[in-house]
Length: 334
Image (cartoon, rainbow, N blue to C red; front, side, top):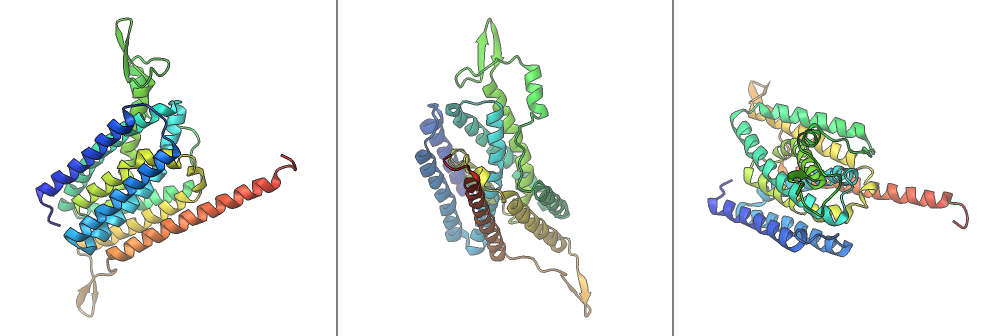
């Protein structure tokens, strides 16, 4: 994929403009977004992500556009699962709702920076060591198994990681939030506030999320530009999506199963790709032949869409039947 430098500059500039719009139009003035506001902006960011695929189709052809859409859908579905963790972190730190936008904005910026570093690091490994696909594939299969074992449950309590505990030990911290400030000066010394600590918690969680998502998208495409764009456009709408679906996450009861299926599928794709990259053959009539053909982009996209559709529909049907059963069991007149 030949991507001119001006295209990279234009893409990064568009992302920075979208971040600036978020900062100036929403985050700078603390407020709790209404459902209407979150819905419109979520739809706008999804539209931007989908329209970018049309640009890829126009500039580089259908195969690469399909790879982009597959990567975008995978990253978007993984980001929805990440929202469970964000909800737990916000609740654990008792972040006032009007300040949550700022926390999420900083978390998204950190995620963009970290994932960009991981993407270029991953690309360097892939280009120089073809056997790395075996590691990526095995890791995704292990992650899929972990998701499958978690089943429909998610931890209902956030446990601080080592980085957050270290920040609390090293720096004096105020007892509560001081508006949306991250540091304050009291009695001649600087103190950090829970606002900064929760941002550290979100940022450190982003590192763990990247460990899953970057190998996953390398199983779909090895085009660095598409990987970067899919990650960026899936992350940019995460703040609005948090306020839109925060109350609906509990209804996605089968999300872990769907993500497990997607990660297992991509892990298998990576292992098959590794066999091809490392020129592993079997002999058929004296001719070397690949044991398993690689899965083409269009079938991959169809599999991912099918898994997400079945997972969502089954989750909503299960939630609806559960609510109906609860209403049936309510005492008369309640």
